[in-house]
Length: 126
Image (cartoon, rainbow, N blue to C red; front, side):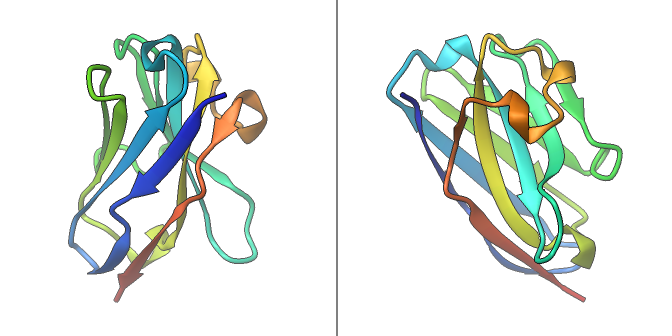
């Protein structure tokens, strides 16, 4: 089992920044690729980005490319999502997810992942 806990969500004005963090426990964190998804009310869960288990491969959704950055610290068992130039359409619950030995570019759908966090709310006001 892998337990994932997101933090860092909140309310921010358009154009602002937030940094989300996901803390993992339970298994060898460096064996897992990590992904970020988001889900707005009434919409399907949407891929944001993913980072391979070794950190050498990162893949982003076109909607966030150039604004969001994923990083991981295998010594601290954390993966972060730095979100800049936020827009109202970025408002959603953000989830982190883990996939054993995954490659980022292949992990763009929720069903690819083994474990999920509980989510953290991000609200961007206009």
